[in-house]
Amino acid sequence: MWENNSLETSNHRPVRLKTNGGEWMRIANQVSALRSGNLQKCHALRWLRPFSWLALAIFVGFSVVPAAAQSYAYVPTHKSNSVSVINTASSSVVAVVPVGVQPLQAAISPDGAFAYITNSGWFLGTLGNNDVSVISTATNSVVATVPVGRFPVGVAFTPNGALAYVANQNSNDVSVINTVTQTTVATIPVGTNPWGVAVTPNGAFVYVTNQATNDVSVIDIASNSVVATIPVGSNPVGLAITPNGAFAYVANYLSSSLSVISTANNTVVGTVSTPTYPIAIAITPDGASAYVATNGDNIVSVISTASNTATASVPVGSIPRGVAITPDGAFAYVSNRMSDDVSVISTATNTVVATISGVALLPEGIAIKP
Image (cartoon, rainbow, N blue to C red; front, side):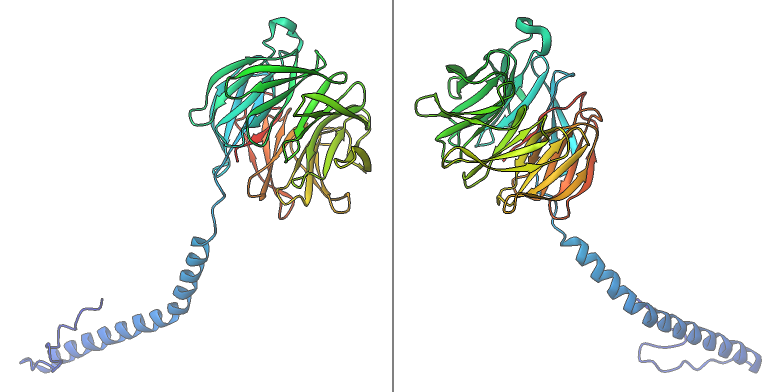
């Protein structure tokens, strides 16, 4: 606020001063200078006023930009025998959870309460666990360990969360875990060297990729038996099922392609070319796009599920091995095995908007808490 001039009273009448002429001149000059200064300040404020409104508008604009939705990504890091937990809102590692020997893949229970981590044991055979670590997402600590077959890789839950299916590469079977008792309740023979697992949204069937036999086994959940075997490309690994349950997308590692399976009749209805060595697939919640990690070219290929053609090619870190989509569909998180980091892709622009370091050695799969 401006102060009143010292030569004015509260009713703004001038004060009559008794002094000589020179003194009057000095006082007059001071008054003139004060008035001139005040006028200059007022002009300066008028000149700055439009900019103050501009600054306010910018501030308000920034203040209404929505923050990234907070969730958590679980990244098995098989050389560190641990799982890195990433806060997706801050794009930072907030916990590291020790698990079994050389973990590979992760799945989150439908209620978000648990992360299941497959501990492959790698080349240690019977010395290397061959089990699943169950992490409480509330405490980020292991609350159970469930023995399964040899060299477990892929894992997926039924939609009601009652069962988890685990593909065991070296025992050529699938273990079925009761999630209440945390025990294996069934073992289902499949093809040779199974890798990936996905469950249909209606909870009726499990699809399992078999690397060495180049096919996909279809398991009927009601009977826990294989009801179909579908030939696909060479060395199938990761797979994902569209949210409407109509199609299963299979990554054929050695033939650089995706096989598109109609779940209605369990036949391949399309083949999509990809960059070399596609290994993992995630489909957006709206079912419009499939994000495919291809570790031969350090690329994530974006596939339109409507046309089964590539719509974008996104460079990421070194040797991407896993991909997962945030629950709101806004971002794809990609685990990069050799650069020990995670790339964050905006699904709106299909560009990398963040790279998360601090991930432990050799990240493999990735799963995001719903």
